[in-house]
Image (tube, rainbow, N blue to C red):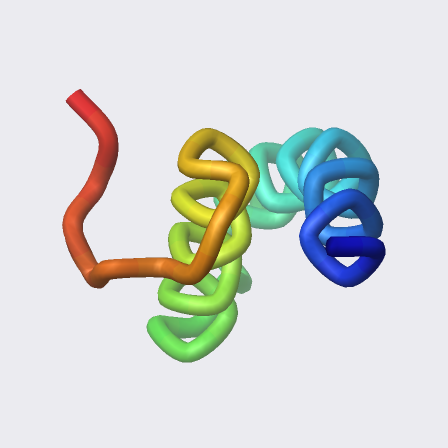
Length: 54
């Protein structure tokens, strides 16, 4: 799916940004949840199941 591919590409960027924001202590739980969801989708290459990859 094109959407998953787009999410995978976005994860590469958001991951670095997220790390920067976390270091600044400004990230909110909602943003963290969104980032985890994207990362899980990226690794699974499909719909998120809610479980983090091992």
